[in-house]
Amino acid sequence: MELWQQILWGGIFMGICLLLQTAALVMASSVVMRLAAHLGHCPRALVSVVMILSALLFILVAVTIQVWIWAWVYVSYEALQSWNDAIYFSLVTFSTLGYGDITLESGLRIFGAFASVTGVLAIGLGTAFLIALMTRLMKDRLLLSPKDD
Image 1 (tube, rainbow, N blue to C red):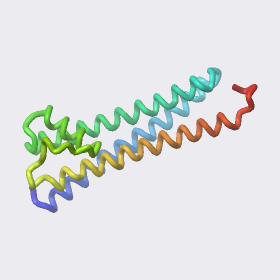
Image 2 (tube, rainbow, N blue to C red):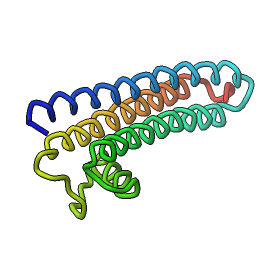
Image 3 (cartoon, rainbow, N blue to C red):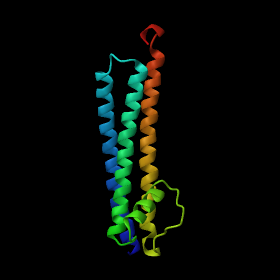
Image 4 (cartoon, rainbow, N blue to C red):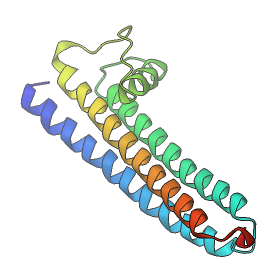
């Protein structure tokens, strides 16, 4: 693949994945808010646990789908021969571990690097979402009087 093609297609797949990540976080936000309203009569600690686990579920599903998208691309472009190698390479690259035991040919390395950038951004967005959620939960908890708990 030519350099401009690697940049073009890498950018396109990165955009698709980050759109998916953003949609997952928007959906997670909506579900978490509805859960909080629905579980309002439950102890606040339980509500907090359910909210955080729900958000985590959305993030993990979104990341898993993105890893599968990149694996599909590697298999489709015949960059990697087996789904096992493609998923492994995709996960290792997406998480930026980069063990180096499987590598792409030189004509696809720039393209493959886009998966790393996607992973950094997607995991960063998910982490920021969880920190914002936990900050909100802690702030709300601190504002309650002891008898409200």
